[in-house]
Length: 184
Image 1 (tube, one colour):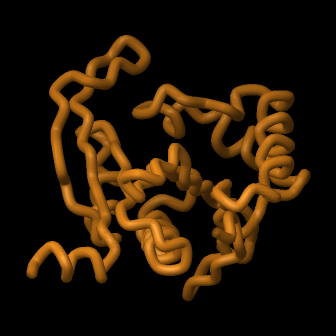
Image 2: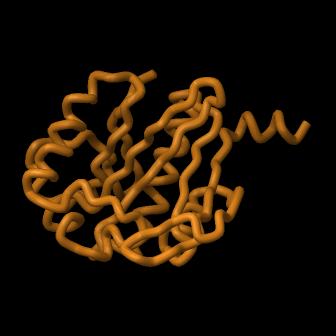
């Protein structure tokens, strides 16, 4: 296992975080309610939290099963992607991502997610990658579908975020070689 390695796509660089990323994460993700509207999770809510989150990522980069990428479009950080909760018995991992609102609609979520799915299932030999989103989060749903993930289940009212209830859509991506085995 290689953990977080640099991944280049047509327009993006998925890279390890650096100390200077904390300020951007706080400004673009921590202060904007749109960024955690459907997750309720905001590790960048204060400057100190953003700095500690980045420092924690950096501390874990030596671990072969730690996956945490900053998504950079050449002008700076525009998103985050992480994979976590690896289950070796199922050969399964969960992935989550976020793209700053000022970069929405450019296809960055799909491009970054596709690269990470291929990395995890190809290079890291993980059979299945799962992800979820609130049913109302149309952008995340579309990015997962365009990246090749398939809807596996809908959990009615499973997400309680900020006083709102949302259905939880669970998606999965299976390594192409595994799909072929399943079809035989």
